[in-house]
Structures are given as structure tokens and as C-alpha cells.
Image 1 (cartoon, each protein chain N blue to C red):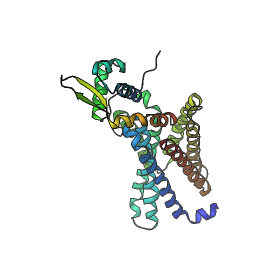
Image 2: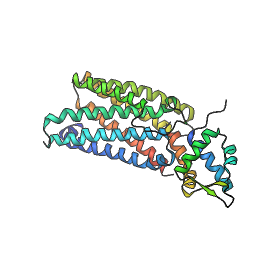
Image 3: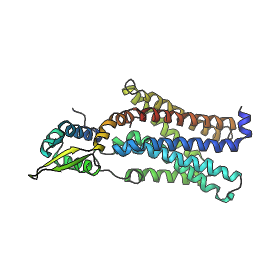
Image 4: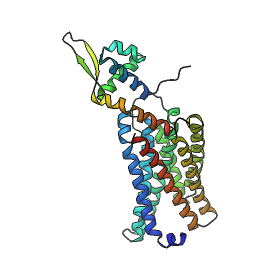
Length: 90
Length: 227
């Protein structure tokens, strides 16, 4: 059985997907995130609220997501957060 | 050396309270950024534990020392002891809960207060009962025994974590050591109460153990967060 991904890991995976493509359409990001649409929506709302990603709207009014400076910082600090959580058994 | 410490007991207590209060403050501040970025519940409960330890020690030893210099009337003294017990017991609960929270909370549960949610309220109620009974019976024994039971469990959890991931995550062995030392410190306190009439040498040994335990945690936090 596959281990359920932790919240932190899900956020990292979403941000990595956005980073990998510079800007990504919501549907592609949903597939890449491997989450249910409901969960995906919750995570995206949280990431926007925390200013890790932003929504860009082009001339044809199509939405894409791109990474913010804070989003890059999270990815850089992810290893430290992971080390902290694992070393203290949290 | 013990005699020198006993002669300067009040000053040493004050210093002890300041040192542990400062260590807790550094741990809470050092983990602030990690928590804000991750909103990880485990980090949150871990920080709550050190926040409560810090408040407890400052109330007991810093404010307690002021009684010696008669800044306060002695009629207030029980209030400080009650608060000290409350914060210390809750800190122990938060620390063990930080190791176990995944078993009680859904990983994707919406973000909510870690100081006031239904599971933590149960811990508050248990703490209130323990503190109240200790106050009525004019003893510390319930605090000591509850903490001994708690840290037996914490030692077991931390040795399991160490066996599982100890090679990959090096601090897990120090965590286990810290839990064993905490268990020893509480056991020494209980022995001092029950069999040795608050023998000063035993109490001082438990103070020294406590400083080592908090320094161990500080070492882990500083080492990992500076990366």
C-alpha cells in the first residue's frame, strides 16, 4: 500500500510542478498533483493565501499558476523543515 | 560544590529560571520561521511545549525568587506554584502530543488552533484535575507521577523512532537520551519528595539534569535550523 502523502509533501509536490513549468494551467496542475479536485482546490486556495503561488490571467482570460518569491523560499527551506520534522520525530 | 550551591540557593534558582527561560525562548523563536513556512502541526505542538516550559520555569524561579526578596506577599505564593504546575504538566503533554499528533488528527485536517482545540481541551482538563488535587492535598506527587508515566511513554516512542530512522536522522538518539534524562529528573524529584525529605543534593542533581536536557534540545534546534 502506498503511504499517504503528508501535507508538507503535497505542498512541495505542487510547488515543484509549478516551478518545473514556470506557469501551469489548473487542469495540468491537478493531474500533476495527484489529488482529488476537492483537495486540490483546498491546497491551491491555501497556497494562494500564503502567497506561494499566484494566478496569472492572459488576454484570452485563461488562468495559469506561477511561483512567487515566497514559493521559491519554501522549496529552498523544505529540506530544513523535513530534517527538523524527522529528527524530532514530529 | 553542593554546599556552595546550597548556600547560594536563591541566586542559583534565579539564574536557573533565567537560563531555562532563555533556552525555551530561543527554541520558540528559532522554530518560528519553519513553522510559519510549513504550518506543520508537529512543529506547532513542539513549540507550544517549549513556550509552556519557558513560562512555567520563569513563573516558578524568576517570580518565585522575588518572594525571597519580599517583593510580593507570601499569600500569593500558592498561585505561582499552581501556575508552575499547570504550565509544566501542559508542556509535558504538548511534547508527547507533538510525537503522537498524527494518530489523533487527520493529515489534511484544516488548519486550526493548537492551543484550543477539542483534543487539547481534554489535556487541559486532565491538567486542571491534577493541579487541583495536588493543591488540595498540598503535594506535588500527582505532577511527579503523571510526568513519570508520560515520559516512560515518550522514551518508548523515541526509542522506536530511533530504531526506525536513527541512522538517517542523527538527532533521534539525542532525543531519546533527552527523554531518558527527563524521566530520571522527574524520578529524582519523586524520590526526594517520598523518601528523602526534599534532600537538597537530589534536587540540585535534578536541576543539573534539566539544564542538560534543555541544552540538548537547543543544540538540536540550532544545528538543524542553521542549515
